[in-house]
Image (cartoon, rainbow, N blue to C red; front, side, top):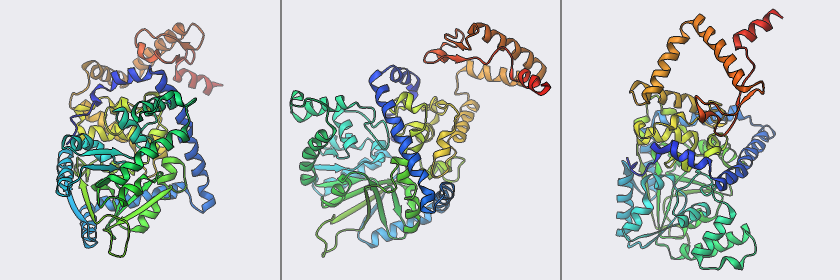
Length: 479
């Protein structure tokens, strides 16, 4: 497991820092309605297409479950079909092995420069750092990934890696990196910055010896990698260099092209609110003698890195994930902190489950608790992953292993003892309700809560009068 670079154990301190960052907060609040609004609009159009969201969710979850139930079989079918079409298939246990295999392939073919399309697994493996150490230049070509590579940062979102950056920050970064005086531009201009990046990246596309991409899905029946993007860089990376390496997780396999088509009904809608992405590439085998473009060598690296251990476990449902980002796009915690607070590759609710499972639950103690319990993540997940339930299960494991602070464990025991004594519980909650109402001084809100100041550091604590729920319910019943 290549998890040494995880900072997930520092979630609380990183979260405190991010919530006080005004530039980040402005960027997040600007992005939030775009993600959720576009998704809602595209989902609302589904009945016009004769489709129902819930029916599609059932179908997509069923496809992913069918693949996971016989994962070894479908992977072998994929391997046989990919090799029959001229591709090489390699297997990697962890991030270290990914780096070793990629560098070995690159050195065998004299590679000096690599262009990359977005790949979360290369982030898991810290592949860019390994390539640079081996004397091979990696160039991210997805615009968001390119921006954060120049900034020396990690992605903060799996769909929009630079969502935490302001336009002014990107303009200053380009001016510094590209050697163009920032004063030459009178204002931040997205089309101009995009043209500037395109001009720089075009030279890398034309001079790269190898292209590296991920894969949204692996289609077993044809040995195909399916790549879904909104930028033309994916096509450039996978067709211009003579050598193409696909790095993807073993859980990405689906049985048939028909299964892929069904999943595509919800993937772009859930990710970016589009009915279809701008570019959908089905990459099979190598270039034939009659073709004028495409790689002459294709290598698939199929990666475990903790995934196989989830098959057959209580957390197998997490392997359904199709990396759409819908869970984080609707998560109030994510949009309060941004992705970097989570400390590893995957942020938001999906990261709150995946990071503890992949890097060790003891290395990400706070992530399963990074939830308000609103369940928005599970309600929008296109493959019905019960993310809140999985987080709850991880919290139970932490408690059973004694990994939580002693004060928290003592508090839970006290609560359990009190909850089993109804008369005492009601008496104490009556006192607590009246005390909270006194603190609110009739305003209905507590500005500063001395016993737990963290609760009121960024918001007021609402108080619903001086009567408990039981008292209110009894009064309403009498009325």
